[in-house]
Amino acid sequence: MSPKTPKWREIADNIAAKIASGVYQPGDPLPHIRTLVAEGYGSKATINTAYSALETEGLVTTSRGHGTTVRRRPPQNIRRHQERYNWEKKLARSPIGERSNNGVVERDTGLDHDQVECHAVFNTEPATAEMATRFGIEVGTLMLHRSYWHSTPGESVALSLIDSYVVHAVAAQNPELLDSAREPWPGGTHHQLSTIGIEIDRINDAVRARTASAAEAKKLGIPPGTAVLLLDKTSISTSGDVVEYSHVVLPAERTELQYTVPLERWAT
Image (cartoon, rainbow, N blue to C red; front, side):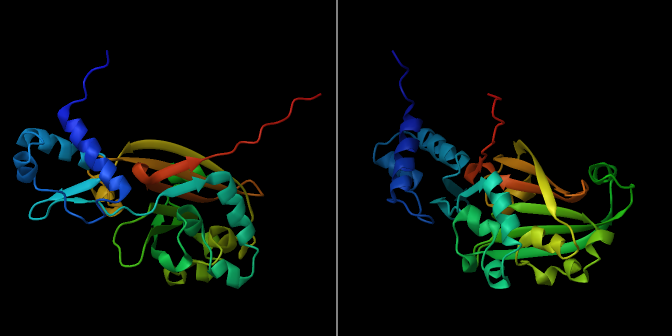
């Protein structure tokens, strides 16, 4: 005999179903706890537990003075990495018109080009021991550090947080690569590097998870204590050099990573 579902879980599931079906829309307030208590749904503690569960699951937010409301969630981010990277490399060879109206963020989210805003901040900093090891360079080598985040127009919630690193002397071969005002760059990193004669041969990904920091949770618009995915992306040139490294923070609740791995055939 299966255990009986707790009352708070029944309430939470009922509200979650109404959110999924559109009865409650993003931004809509949920009924006050005292209202549900008066209507016989359960005790104040039971309703509180149900609402807390919904907040932990990322469906609602609770704030003083505003009660509990349905969360406004940015688009789902589906990263089909093998297709994504090959598509971006092909895009780098396309005409400027095509490059200017396409990007991997749009591809991942399904948004139109004019529904994505790019925010970029560039600075220079010496390579740490970790960064020097990644690139095979001396500690203290000057790096170009590029911080990116993307959002939908008028929204402050980031779709992801990206920190990209390139050896400064390499990027400086084309001074335009040092200018954040030129972002979003038509054709992305592949095209940027192609302007200084670099072709990316392969990309190594490493994915792990941890709890979001307070700053990350605020920027990504996720509840405190929510998990994030950490993607370490290393781009290697056709000459075998590490030419770009990105550290990407993705909200786990709205990110899906998809991989297709071709396998070698058995000899017949």
